[in-house]
Amino acid sequence: MSTSFKSIRYFIAVAEAGSISAAIHELGVSQSVVSQAIAQIEADLGTLLFERRARGMALTHAGHQFLRHAHQIEVAMRNARDALASRPHTVTGHLNIGVTSLMVGYYLPFLLDRFRRVFPRITVQITEDRRDYLEHLLVSGELDVALIVVSQLQNHRALETETILRSGWRVWLPVNHRLVEETSIDSADLAQQSLVLLQVDELGDAATALWNTGGADPNVLIRTSSVEAVRSLVATGAGCSVLPDMLYRPWSLEGDRIEARSLAKPLAALDVGLAWRKGAAQPESLRNFLTAVRPTLDGHGLAAASHGAR
Image (tube, rainbow, N blue to C red; front, side, top):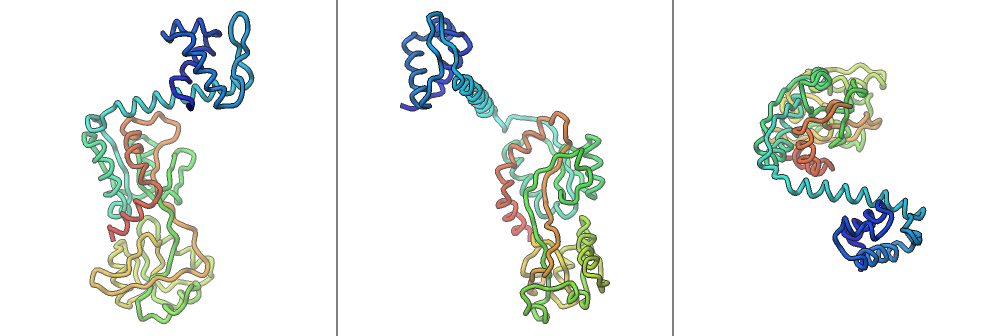
């Protein structure tokens, strides 16, 4: 028979009381039950936890070590009971979420749906703005959490972050473009092409870094804030683009195909994630939000969501 949680409770009681006889008054069980429980734990661990003395029991070195673990188990069990005893569908509150324009269509609906299914009575207010301004609102306490590109964060010391998706960059090409035959594309080759740049969430600035390192001047056809415009322009042969792979889909709205190829010198990956104020006591609504959405934060759920948004 393996160690039970009840046996661990008995062990803690004896360790704190200093004897079995003193502990059983608090536990309300017989001395033999407690003795058997401690013997079972010692057998499972393969070591003595107590020195038996005439006037009581003293913890061995191993006993002191196990006591720390036993307290942690006790706290974990108490937290689990509290969590299971609560009824999320009756919890009320208010949550302020910040989001950039790019994240609104790709990831926010998925996370918000997950949260509202678990905590339907918590009201949500959403603010859409630039990442730098959302950081300001987080630091000032006007927002509880923001869904942003965390790899471009400025206030690292003031904000906690949790990455939910990491995306590399690829070159988008029309299906009949000569560079489609290449497995990877150099910035020098791209410099000769008409470029369609997505100027949202500072993606245009990040893509420009490609030209800065390559020493070539880009031939920019247009800078736009519309992902669909980029897709349509690339698919119809107006130009090429360099974008995070999380935005890629093989077809434009008009049904024209888009190819994607790797960069010969990859750009730094883009991290999408959640950010909230560091060091402050978390509002209950924020804790509830993180509890609800964390099962999706391995990236698989978010990746599926982005494919659905395309």
